[in-house]
Image 1 (cartoon, rainbow, N blue to C red):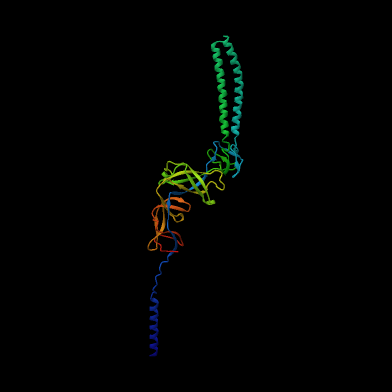
Image 2 (cartoon, rainbow, N blue to C red; image 1 turned 180 degrees about the vertical axis):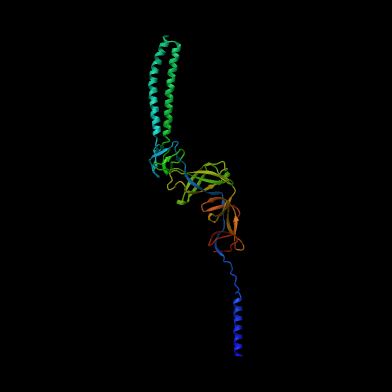
Length: 358
């Protein structure tokens, strides 16, 4: 009897263990974590001044090339070296031109000798003709021979001028006083027609090239004074609007302007970025929404930024952009000045992501 009770107890315990093992443990749902982000509000700029970004370039700059094929015989200058107008910069092998020039010079010498002899005979015939010692036909023949000899000499001299002009393309000289900014070839390399060989610019007179939106171009006039900030050296200089493009066909609705800077400015180099502060001739107050350019999201040709929704989620908003001013860029449409946009985030941001503002 005791053995039966003991066996029954073991069976009941086993059934209880099997039942407990078969039950699945209920999982407690974990709430999605919010991503920490840093936000900002668009900056509303107002006033009669217009801020646009541009780039510094030398007014006088040139990239020299050749019309003759040949090996580079010698490069006479180095990058950064100051040169004077007419100074020899680069030489290309020119044995064929030298041979042609020697041949033409020999032809000129021969033509001069023949002309001297013909001219003596011509003058003699002219005297005899006046004395009626030679006929009209003989005088006409001598005159024709004299004119033909002069024409041959002139043709030889023109050939020499052509060859001398070709020497300008194998002996490249500085077109103005300046500084060598780049060399695109080495000694011994083959130079081909139209190939860039050497570049130089005048470092004493710079200009800033910038693009103005079509909505403001009518308020800008040539000869207007401009304040120019060179951010990399934290220097503000004066400039004058020298030229305004009359077409925006190739610049996406932006009109190019050129602003001449003061001469002999120190610490300014080509390629530096500049911010122009233009005073417009518009009585109405200009306004612009500016956002941090690093917050812009690019997907193909589309541009947007993440704004904060009322549910504290990130919402991707496509926008239309305008001019760039330093680290900020203008938003023409797609966001209002009372909305907040995300500048920095701690993880991978996506549309609808839960966020927490830090």
